[in-house]
Amino acid sequence: MGDWDRRNLLGVATALFGAGLVAPFGRALAADTAPGFVASRAVMTADQKALAGAIAERIIPTTDTPGAAGAGVPDFIDLMLADWYNDGDATDFLAGLIIVDAFAQAQDGKPFVQLAVADQNKVLTCAGGGMMPGLAADWFEHCRQLVITGYYTSDIGCRQERIYLPVPGRYDGRYPYPGKVFSS
Image 1 (cartoon, helix red, strand yellow):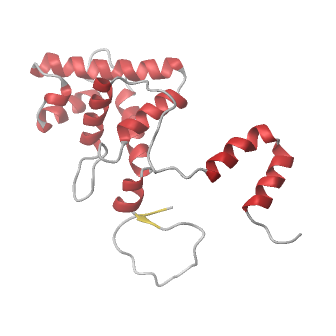
Image 2 (cartoon, helix red, strand yellow; image 1 turned 135 degrees about the vertical axis):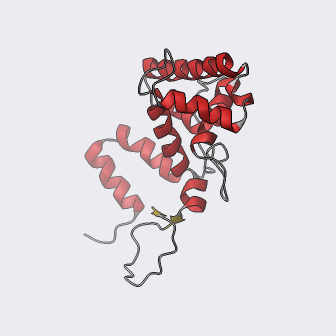
């Protein structure tokens, strides 16, 4: 068969699956882009993105490593809403943001982003506990999963919060465990 490299693999994949399927994959492999999340179109307004960032920062706050907002999670959420969600699901998520902000206004007289951390935590506890009128029962868990996924697929979450060890790598049974979780 001979030596295999990326070009040979793409050629065989093109023959097997067709150029329409493989061309975007090939462009993605060849792209030299900076890490980060860039949606094909903006779905969230600047205020909604700031609200999503404030919620994300309460879910994964800044410690000795940047939190969710610093890792670009609001951009990840916008990317998911624009490029992966159907219109109904995106609308439901955005409606949940509006409900959370309205609840914060009703409880504390300020938008969520302007509340103190302790008050933001109380609002999110209500959202997570099903104590927020009008909010879908699974909205907060859905939001939390988006934040976690966005954070740990970001460069910060993968390389600063965890130790990035690309696979395949060699097996070393005596590798000293550093106390952080590995990601690949």
